[in-house]
Image (tube, rainbow, N blue to C red; front, side):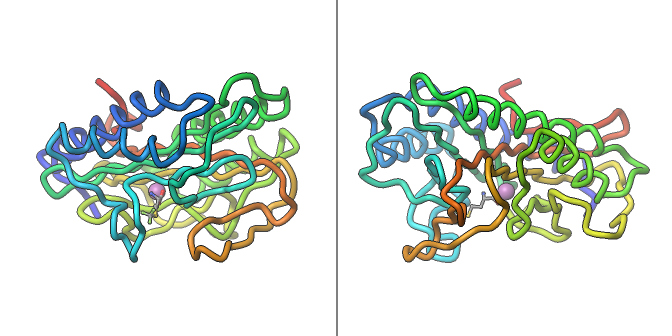
Amino acid sequence: MIRRPDELAKMRKAGRVVAEMHEALRAGAKPGVTTAELNSIAAEVIERRGARSNFLHYHGYPAVICTSPNNVIVHGIPSGYVLAPGDILSVDCGAIVEGYHGDAAFTMGIGEVTAEASRLMEVTEQALYAGIDRLVAGNRLHEVGRAVAEVAEGAGFSVVKEYVGHAIGTAMHEEPQVPNYWPGRPGPLLKAGMVFAVEPMVNAGGAETLLLEDGWSVVTADGSLSAHFEHTIAVTDHGPEILTVLS
Ligand code: MF3
Ligand code: CO
């Protein structure tokens, strides 16, 4: 799907709201705060900006963000969980403006975290940017996953395979998918106007995942830490443009 300039302008607006959610949540996430309180902070940004939530009620999802601490990879539901020093927390946010979607995630440390946790977060963010660098017209889409996996696995970590990135536009999840690994074929040719959410999930231990009883929370099978970084990015004639930023 190729987005027209007027559509990209709306996606920039949605991306900016998501970036504002990130800013507010980074400031709000501290020891003693619950993940339900973070959800309220995010809901307030959406409300203040006159945006809508794409997460709330998505296949029955009950909140406007996902909060995934420590061994939770993605899709953790905000709850009474109290953040503690040494935790890492992945926060996934989305918003709809004028019918167009933004989607982005980050992982942060709460207070002081271990050296391994810091390295996991740094490497996962580097893997995201290595993938974003491949979003150039004329490239093949699956070069993104190859670049992501090279960085993450090169650092001794493992990449989650069961959950992937996606095209995004008038729906949060559009085809094609964006795997975070080389799926054995090059995938679609990239053209200016295509928009993707690239979102590596990287585990400190093995790649295997489990779904918890709540039907949403995806955890590492071995209990190891996991990090998740995501941006919404447009392929343009002058390279990748990250839409989920403040300016
Ligand atoms: N935004 C997530 C993604 O990165 C999906 C969230 S699922 C929801 O694709 F149910 F929480 F909305
Ligand atoms: Co996404």
